[in-house]
Amino acid sequence: MDRTPELGEFLQSRRARLSPHDVGLTDYGGRRRVPGLRREELARLTGISLGYYTRLEQGIGGAGASDAVLDALVRVLRLDGTERGHLYGLARPERRAATRGVAAADAEQLRPSVRNMIDSLGDVPAVVLGRFVDVLAWNRAGHALLAGHLPFDAPERGGDDGCAGPSGRPNIARMMFLDPQTRSLYPDRPAKSRDTVGDLRLIAGRWPDDPSLAGLIAELHRESAEFAALWAEHPVRTCATHTRAYHHPVVGPLTLTDELLTLSDDPGRRVVIYHAEPGSPSAAALRLLAAGARGGTVNGPSPRT
Image (cartoon, rainbow, N blue to C red; front, side, top):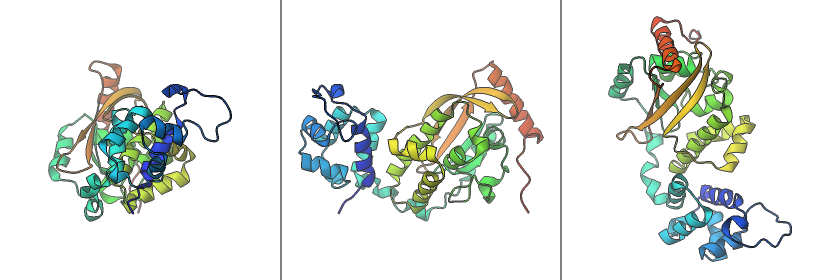
């Protein structure tokens, strides 16, 4: 039986955020057992039988859903473009078939040309992320910006410093929720946390059967109440670009924009580049941080022996 639990969770989360008033229905009062629209109300609005919609929420039969059915759900649930793509990805597991087994067979070795590319950026911080947001590499400026408390070679050698994901490399999601130094870097931590979970939700929809990803999510769910609460809300975020405030322990306040670039020859891998407004105090602070990284004055702890 085709069963996609994530599809049911997503539909339930989006149904729960709508009220009858939102979709033009008369609410005759009375106590509702669950927040948001009832299943029968959503089924009626979309023109789908209640039995069929119930099966979709149970994660059954999504692969057989027509474009008309999915588009009706998009319309009634008021999904944005990112959410629409996520719905289609969850409902059409055959579209994800090409990704299954790839992660298990590929240890995500970094291509030398990608390593050379981020090194050539010099004082511009850059980080290469794997499919499940493991750090595959960072240049000196990227390391100094995000993780000066970790060894520079942590992506290559792994470690037991509390920041590593299933691969042994530093993991951005794990750092965000379980590493105090990383958490203190973001003055608006709730927004950064939500973006992190939203990105991880999209990744989970694309790689639904990978045990290492499932293990990472289970660990975060177990160790972080904040993560568990956000995960239950099922946010989805493309995270293509942000302008965000930082409070760096060495150079103080920064406002930086990050751009995520996909590597078309490496499915699921991305390069994140950070930059400041030219001539701004943040640009000056970023140059100071990069100079310290080149001179060895912004370093993580010595490797354990």
